[in-house]
Image (cartoon, rainbow, N blue to C red; front, side, top):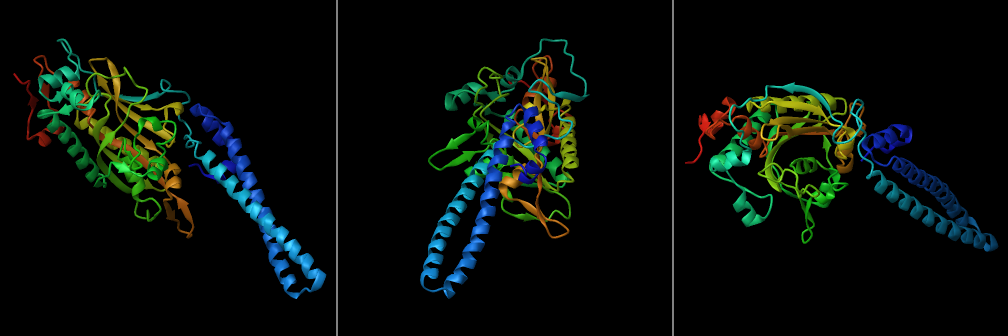
Length: 421
């Protein structure tokens, strides 16, 4: 939720942000109108309440006709006060509901536009050159007896799969390497719940425009998370944090669930776009002043993980129209996918500034004793999808796959994944 004081003081900034995202800038004026009606009703309410109190003292001293007139006036004032209080509450409800529809204010420098208007910040590593026909990750995974989508579909439906044998070991290797990376950077590892309450899901901004991508269990009124970011954001909800010693950092390991609504026919082969996967997510609570630097630090740790996996990749600055509602800025790392000759997103890191913390009531006490919202940031350190890029970039002519040196300790020293004959 955006800062209402910012919206009052600099509405043009919020309108510009809405326009850059392709969202409705007129929401700003609707919120301001409701907020003005609320404040006007409250001002009049306080004035009449003061008169009501003064009248009560006069009634106690009055007699006869004077007392009757004062009581009549008091009854009329009570009705007005009650009506004004109701008006103020109604206006506040409208202002709150409308303000929740306004996305986070995009940072200066974020590219304007939609999905295809990102800016490439850099390329890292060389794309592999093969002198043999390139296999895609599913063909390689089936040859290694690592991926089984047929039985996944038989048991659970389309876009489900089994990771078997070396496939299961490879996912665990990636996720354990991510946890080690997080530990070395000062993160606390956390196994998070994968079912959360509606107020937590809404607080992180996932029940807005993309609510149809979230699984809901109506009988329990709980939501399945699409990332441990949701549970980690809720971890400190309603609390006052002490950030005097630096950011609070957590690395959440969880299963993740996404309906992938509206993506039919896109990346349906294999395990690129699926309904269930595992992920280690970095999540930081920090001060507003430190948020941009923490964002760059998380991006750096993501790049260190990609280097460990020896994957060629590029870093992009995501355009405003492709940001989630909570993100003020987002950097993606996309690995080269040889079978499709394109880049595939493996990690993203978002600076959500105070947007989520305001919704979830997470604050810090400043040096002067005042309270203010903190900033939240998140970023992917490893996920199931990485297997796609690993298999394809490190494949060999006979269908075997070279194991990057950084992952070998997590696979018992294994150097090559051999096809099952």
